[in-house]
Image 1 (tube, each protein chain N blue to C red):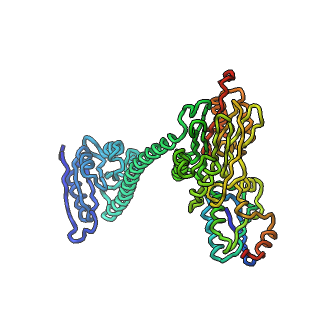
Image 2: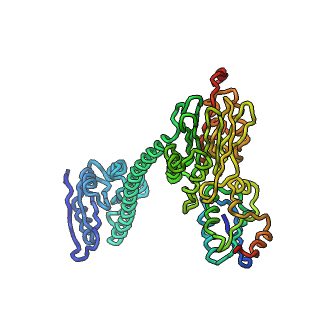
Image 3: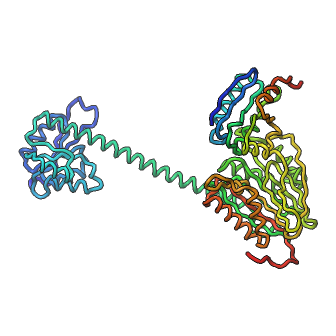
Length: 421
Length: 116
């Protein structure tokens, strides 16, 4: 091996260096030719690294990352085209700009060189002008490639940062979603003599439709469903704020009554329209268990359906404004009487406004028919099958709006068990 | 959504076309603000060309009703169709925003002397 290591020949242009001088690696085993070409390049203002064979050339490329590599075709050991192939096969080096230098410039040879990885050719007999033109053209390409690589690296870094931030946000969102879900009724009987089942599927990680059923004292069951307009984090936060207002201990202090009309009247006063026009709809019920008398009131919420086994089934809603539309309104309670085994369903509009693939809404009539078809089934089956039927209408699992469905059944301990589950 | 403005006397009619929803509420609110600045006494929202109204838009309309005190003028809805009419009824918007079936009826209301 004539030269086992590369050497750097510096020829700075004193006083003229305003930006980094391009670095050219010259690989040629013929020392005279190499010195001659290096001299020409130095005179053109470039910083030149020299290597005496292909192996030393590859080592210099790895160590110095030159802006341009000029390779002699004919060299002992690794010849020019073989060095080209090694460069293109190396993930770190493959974007290097390579010019093959040869004494012959036959079309077949040029084709072979290009196919084996060269970017351009330079004749050893080239004039000074041609050398300058080809080197400048190759350096322009090299600069563009480097710019693309820097941009790619910047993008990779930004992507990694964004991915980390996204994972952090998703983790926080999941914590918030877990918190919101924890506000929903626990999977147990809230009070003896009453069975409760529910399904809940927010359209995003966090939903603005929430509900609750809990004992208000020893003989009374309180239940409500609310819908915060909008979706996502803001709607969920507002919904949790209204849930806090509707807690039994707070109602005793803030309203001084568990009468649904009084509760909604106070909520209407305390929860005005936001500056963006966001608001709540709300349905509140109070079931006196010994008499099975339900008193209820609604503020723009139409999602309460009483499925009566013996009497007439009915939607328990009345024309009313949502909360905050008119802060001076007084909301009145209405009453209904339940029989054993009657079921009260509270539901969000997201379930009956589920669109079919053609855009037709499922509708309250189809929903009611589905609920009524479960007369001989358990409440758990009814909730599950109603959700399944809504998804079948939707043609998928992802509802465009929050979906909540709560069922409450007044148990009849003397009745036989349901036929199916 | 497209909004076209027509001035008739001291009234401004906004002809709304398309969907009135969260996605295009900025366009709608900007048109309303322009009408307010123009000093109109009666802002009439022509709903005939509105195909869809979401819950967010209902809130904006309610906010508009609250932000247009009777002393400064009035806001009304004109000729809502099918689904939109049903939504307005369900949300009881007609309790806080007058709904007219024809432009003549709405404009006739503009000419009535204001209370007080």
